Image (tube, rainbow, N blue to C red; front, side):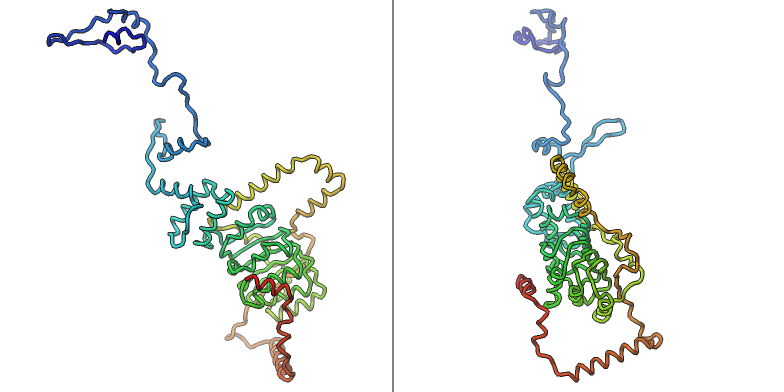
Length: 421
């Protein structure tokens, strides 16, 4: 006790009692210099000297995050800080979302919980990580297909296609796909992926202004023409603003038996009247005198769990391009060689063809089948039936052609494409 009283670092403990011979006696506080220390009391410190407070919002400290991640901090009406422990489900969900790329499979997992797991991984930006994001996205698309994404709109987003091609190819069971104004060309990898069985569910496909030619149309329709697979369920197709598509390329579209709407405006057709007759004869499409609302590019939108992920990809791609555009010498060279106007024109997407009137549009639709219980057939339908009957009789009277002519439409490129399946 004498050591305690002589200490210079003690805090006033109050009165001190000592038991002596069975009785308590209060020690005189003025002894041994304690009085002098009490005359100058030191301020009581709740925290040691040098203690500081740091607001951990975006701090990359995993140890600190693990301490606070298990609690939910809120404020009461009086302004007091209150915390409560998270549920076990929330803790497990957060742990799995942090390691979502290590999941073996999600097949058979409940959809309701999978959607929450997908949202938690998206909030942690796991799908934007290189390598790990692709593996995680593939696990979800393999198990849930169209729930992850049923409609994908990449209109004029060629930067996203260039940066996230493998992620885009991982989507399955899409029903609507818009690739307008992406300048893909005939040899692009994504155009070949369209013939994959994973995209056989696509019913609406927009390929406007993609520098396509007859060779690209032949590749895209080869599986449907020969093996009856690929885009066999296609009901809407937009091939407008592709001037390299000619009359021969339109002939490959006759394999799309379920096609209800077709747009071939702005293509390189020469005999338009003959193309109209062939489309009506082979697949029953009639030329529309007014623009069809199916081609106004407002019906196709990105829908599904991954709709915000596509927006994240676009923001990252645009930001990367902005950083590269800061080079002033390149801009000066463009001004000098007068390539600025050319580059801007190449990026412009002709979605609104204001210069093209309704008569210049080549949009086709399928007429509704006449009711069998309705009125009698008109004279035109009778004449068409009679013409078809005469043609059938003429075909029966002519000798059968050798079987070699059935394979004339297949070129070497077709066989190479088919062998890749």
